[in-house]
Amino acid sequence: MRIPVQACLIGAWLAVQMCWAQAEDSVVQLQKAIAADPARADLRMKLARVFEQKQDYAGAVAELRRALELQPELVEAHGMLGKTLFALGFSAEAIPHLERSQKLDLLGMALAEEHHTGQAIEKLLAALEAKPNDPDLLFYLGQASRVLLQKSFDRLMRADPTSPRAHQLMAETFLAQRQIEAAEREYRKALEIRPSLRGIHLALGTLKMKAGNLDEAEKEFRAETALSPGDGEAAWRLGSVLLQQGRTVDALAELERSDKLRPRMIETLFDLAKAYHLQNKMAEAEKAWLSVIALDDTGELAASSHFQLSQRYRRQGNAADADRHLRRFQQLQPKAP
Image (tube, rainbow, N blue to C red):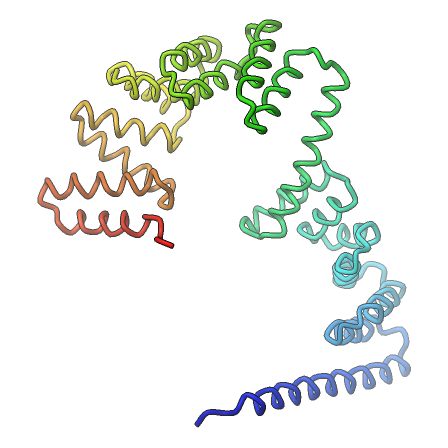
């Protein structure tokens, strides 16, 4: 039997009215109890909770303040008051209560809203260890980091606008605006002033590689590896461009060096698998593809690794594993609109 929509709405309305009536009754009972024993901080906290249910936040704040007047060390009351004040936009007032109650997530957000950026980042990072995918924490951390970054960059440009780092910063600003020639010009200026500045050749090589100029990219990446022999990314970049040039033996040497310098770097592992495959070192290639999947089984590199593994197992006559990897490859394909 289908229940008419109007009846559902009436039922919902009645349920809400009953909840409100129960809340009102609780308020009356608690207020009577408090009148009989005004020194009971716990009763005031219970009343504050009822006020919160009724969305009477002013009433909740008032009761929590009275509870803390009676028992200043009441940690739970500090937490409730800090949370309510923050929800109402009183971030500065909420901070000491959130500190007392050690609510790191809300404390980090409140500090960010009050522009205490360094402290905010510290608290937000600590809170993210417990809740790594919390959208609010991630949002506030990104916001605070952006503010701190902008402050640092502004100070750099004021302190020494002709320094190599200032030119590097200008290059990255142009790069964000897709002004590639201007970006390259600023990178070159930085190198003119300080030829030993690490990271610049890496950036230039990446620009050249994106433009399809593999010879120039190799030149820049070699210069970076000479400056930074311990940089795993520079070794991977050089190995990757050599692989694209068809110089598999040379590429493999750089990619293996990159893997030793920075293990578990997914881009290196994927290119390693490709190089091993080209050298017909199939056991090593299989191991590298499996490592890619183990690190991240969601992206394009994982999809390609699943496909290559399915082909390998098919040739070995291992139909079950071949089908399993092929299914995962198909699952990772972009959905048609």
